[in-house]
Image (cartoon, rainbow, N blue to C red):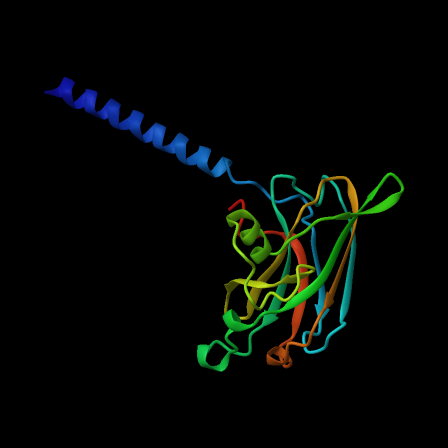
Length: 195
């Protein structure tokens, strides 16, 4: 009986050890942030068309992790925690003109981007939604919300390390529903990836 108990005890210890090793391996699989993460923020007025924002930045080993997707997000400040006091962001379509350029061999070269709706239409062979007025525009899509803000994704930025970029963003038409909502654009590693 004692020998059986010792055998079971060894198997339990071995199982616990393997579970611990597996858990540590899963934690190690998380893609870490860069040492000084790329995180650029600029305000934008959504209530007027033609509002332009320009980001100029370089990616390097300290601020860029090639294993993480980087995105251009729109963050809209909420007015309060009560859902009834807020604009319904699912029905708001916010278009932008956007150009991403990379410095290559002494000249700026365009880097192609697409919004969520364009990528889905391309991948599934479906038409764009009727309200998606132009293939040249990039529309924001709500991806999360917390007590203080809405986060809307505009595009994933196809970038590489050790490169210089210009990102120009311009409002195309006024979004009257958001005229009293402070907003900002953010270039950063996608917070929903690598976690």
